Image (cartoon, rainbow, N blue to C red; front, side):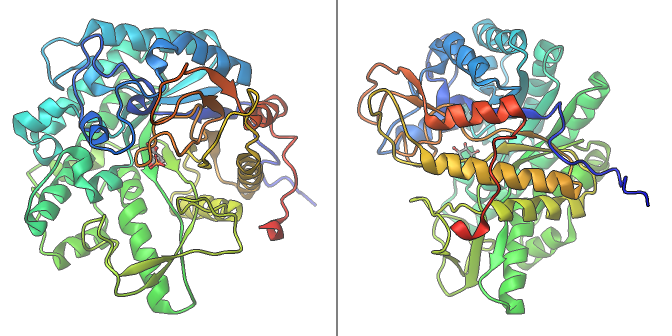
Length: 473
Ligand code: BG6
């Protein structure tokens, strides 16, 4: 009997074990060396916690941080380039040399240490000048400026960067338009602007996918999609349909357009029902068809359970997330901020994506466990994060054995950083940074217990990952 079904038994030898961050959350130096102001800088300034001016000062600790990555044994590092460090106003005539120097330094250090750079072109930090000039992503003009910025990055760094991520969590930007600097007092107008911004982001990425394939035959490029598997609260078809529709409109839309090159019909139905009209021009649909991603980046943290209620979610715009309640499953390990530990959910998610896009290469671009943490005698005993990583890596191996083409895993985050909503209280890092919301302290780096666990994972290709007892909660 032939048992060779061409299935993998384990993580492949060239699996990219990595870790993840983003520019405004780690770099600091927000006003140094010519960097322009971004929407993210202004949003965090309004935060009651901490802004982006210093964060964990990676800009001035870059050698030390890459040395720690090398000690950890990382095979890949996913980070973002700050658009406003390269073009301070988003569309300046010439790029900013000091910004180029910083990323050259970082990329060269990574390459020297055999760490594959996985570069996000745009992670929540639109240059504010573009918003002032023409409304930023609410205008079609953003397509050309994003294209020119991406082309500049390809020309500057494409000889050493082989993995590119176009936009981080586009659907979040579309559903929370203020994250792109888009405002309007009229809710319908706001939704209209925001859906057009979503459409322009699709077109901009399609052009950039096409350009990347033209410039480099061996590079991979795709979106970094926020994907949270939704499970219905009960067996009713009504709850199941609502959960699925939310998953389509919040996560699969970004994957469907990137891989299939067209707007999915569930999205068109949504627009029609909400009386929203996209700014479609001649040639747009050809543009979408001609530029496709050749892998998917997925930010997958946990699953969620939803049931239909009358409660409106005030944070998101109406429509996609209205009239649902998120239900906590108390049997799981749950973090303070609503994330839960669901390793089997990750395997389920990987199968779902593979069913929809058979054999598509997948990079887990984010995945992580948040905690409030304190340094005790130079150590941080983050046992829950170790449990989370162990369980998720165990189930990733199962997904690979199922035939899912997962090529890299980049937990969030390499080091503690500025959380988008909770400052430094909410830590995700494998490396502790000695500062808090009120004081910069000495910004010293201390590997946590999870750092040493993950180091062993990388060293042994996950042989140290223990069999998962799914009943252990
Ligand atoms: C993802 C983002 O949405 O989640 C990251 O890409 C973010 O930038 C991460 O930090 C965790 O969210 P938060 O709100 O805890 O920082």
